[in-house]
Image 1 (cartoon, rainbow, N blue to C red):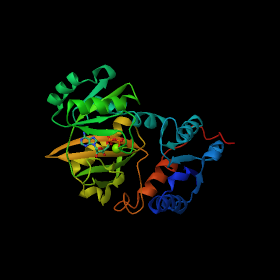
Image 2 (cartoon, rainbow, N blue to C red; image 1 turned 90 degrees about the vertical axis):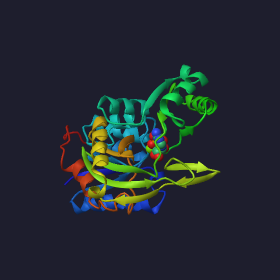
Image 3 (cartoon, rainbow, N blue to C red; image 1 turned 180 degrees about the vertical axis):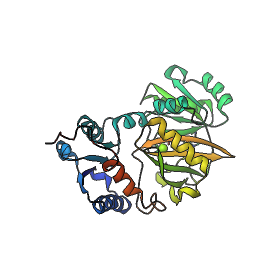
Image 4 (tube, rainbow, N blue to C red; image 1 turned 135 degrees about the vertical axis):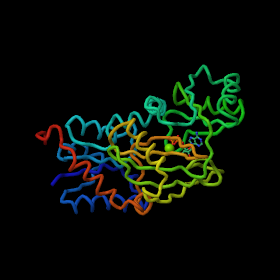
Length: 301
Ligand SMILES: Nc1ncnc2c1ncn2[C@@H]1O[C@H](COP(=O)(O)OP(=O)(O)O)[C@@H](O)[C@H]1O
Ligand SMILES: [Mg+2]
């Protein structure tokens, strides 16, 4: 029997999908004979009382979730997400470089320094990447700093906006598709698959259009019904980052499959991502508490 802490913040439960998912983690843990507690920020100092930590709050190097991850690691307590994965996945330049090093296919991508965000360079990039370019700030999440540009003037306008957040930005070939594949990967093995159907009004899975939030629709897919190439590439991409839990986004167009992003801390909503993978809760609990031993089991407060 082990003690699992699920680290959450108040905003982790903004809807019934999230709440149900957190309850399913607790049920799965308890069915397997473990103690499962939800841990909030003020209780972080009690982290050493647990045998494993599962973070279900937004991860960012500047968030409390990062502190939870580091404190767990310092005490040898298995944790998802580990701090390395949080750091890499919050920096798209680092993330894409790791994918490129492993030869994982991504859309054609160019990293741009501040001095390259000008109309002259834009003209050359449109020639190289195509008539539509996707610009990204390295720390974008929830599609917040990802924009499509179609002219050098637009390129400079959006590029300069993103440069307020970072010294470098990314320019990427636009790969058009009706949906993103999302494959959950745990410890190097596929965990679940789904399609995030992109709203008609935008090219992103989430966007504010005319002041209104447009969200993708999630369609669960059985792993063995997903294209094998999508699942294979997702696992390869996840392995380039680490051994934890990842949500890999991919697009498959005209027989070509590319990885758009590897996310740590992937969304798991009850009835959506888990639709054809009801065992995912058990697998995550088992991965944290049953398959690995804490490195310093003696450290307890
Ligand atoms: N190169 C691309 N071509 C077409 N669509 C893209 C491209 N890159 C990203 N997108 C769309 O924009 C969304 C957000 O991009 P992503 O890189 O995942 O940033 P974020 O970390 O902010 O979610 C993706 O889910 C995808 O639908
Ligand atoms: Mg994304």
